Image 1 (cartoon, rainbow, N blue to C red):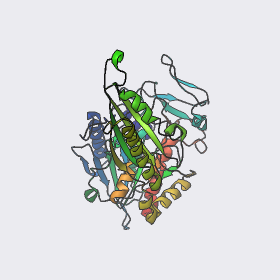
Image 2 (image 1 turned 135 degrees about the vertical axis):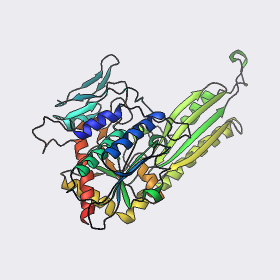
Image 3 (image 1 turned 90 degrees about the horizontal axis):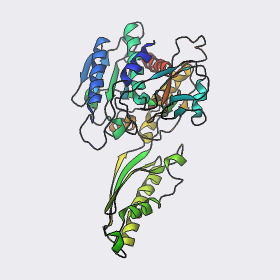
Amino acid sequence: MSSVLDRFIRYIQIPSQALPGTEKVPSTPGQMTLAQLLGEELKQLGLDAVEVDEHAYVTARLPSNTERKVPTVAFLAHLDTATEVTDDTVRPRLVENYDGCDIVLNEKDGVVLSPSVFPDLLKYRGETLVVTDGTTLLGADDKAGIAEIMAALEYMTANPEFLHGDILVGFTPDEEIGHGASLLDLEKFDADLAYNIDGGAVGEISYENFNAAKAKIVIHGRSVHPGKSKDKMVNSILLGMELAGMFPPEETPSHTEKYEGFFHILGFSGNVETTEMNYIIRDHSAEKFAERKKAMESAVETINNKYGKGRAELEMSDQYYNMLDKIKPQMHIVETALEAMSQVGIEPKIIPVRGGTDGAQLSFRGLLTPNIFAGGHNAHGKHEFISVQSMESKHEFISVQSMEKAVEVILKITELYAAK
């Protein structure tokens, strides 16, 4: 088994799902368990200044082995997994020499990974996939990124003739719930530039992301016995449904792509007396982002105008912003990554991130951090999969696979900066 696959399988079997609604960092103990394991592995690789702090931030330095003065490059990934589907007891399965047909993940529950629904599968005919058992997510977001960084560090430490400047590594908690790199001490971390290994398919690189806000709406109704409620009852559930209907159905995640923004209702719960609705609001354009937030305010105002002042209450706050404006003046960071991909035989795909990343947060704090692919597909669900290096493949020059390619890109970026 290759180093990156071995590491990936090991890491995904440590539950580290983030828990929304808590201010504690990390939000779950499994993240600290994984952080401590990684800290020990970094020490075993011989890195300096290995630290696992009280918030599960893992940092370390591989000292330069070249006399040239070169930039200090950091590689980052996050410890936590998404909140939508559990990562407790991940049972990964290898599908070798994938034939392009349906993959039954869980016959009992009828969970099938099918190219008719997920056509990207067909790109991986003849390759080896890692899939779930249909009861959990896989955790490629972002334990694939962690495994790839660790495998690259393993290569560098085992091959002292491979020249590199100072290399920093950072693994961060709670990216999926917005904490991410917020507590990373950048003055102490002291990187000149960074790459976040937390993207999708091979070749993807991103230096644009959504502007993001979250909104909580609480609707106050009036409960009266339904047999005697005429002109008295105010059913908060119905008011919530009315408010939800004010947003265009075509502006939801399942109907949008590329640079198209959306309103996304994450939760709707309540009774006649009280209903709570939780939304996220996303758009790449700052102007359209502002318009969407105004639309949310207007919807709440409409309910209050129709049913009485204070009937609906809105709490809305910004979460993160598009890193494009920060990256633009220093495009050499992106250009170096594109050159690295080209040199290892990958066709780069520049895509906007339809979400947020630690990279966006770090870029706004002064450490420019575009995103590079980690290789996973269908993140946040039971149909998640990733392609790995097939140890039996006789056609590696054609069937070069995702996680191994990510390791190659990390090494090539390091090499290119050492040569500058």
